[in-house]
Image 1 (cartoon, one colour):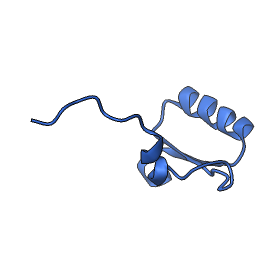
Image 2 (cartoon, helix red, strand yellow):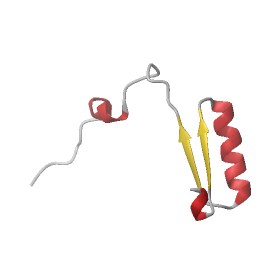
Image 3 (cartoon, one colour):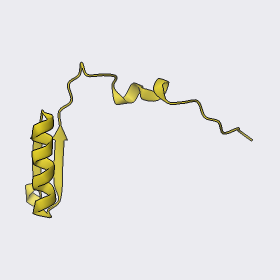
Image 4 (cartoon, helix red, strand yellow):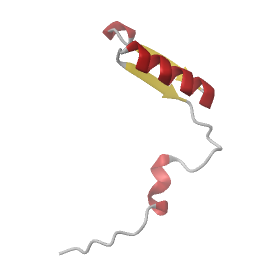
Length: 60
């Protein structure tokens, strides 16, 4: 990211995320924030389809 004039942050806690977000907004530069998520915190994003409500749309 730095090669393109931006900034990158690696965060592992909510406090680090808040700090990185505040710094990125203040910098006005392109920013990538890599938020490391605890694998025991919940379901993987790829498996959330079973949590989505059933569609009320009908097929034609």
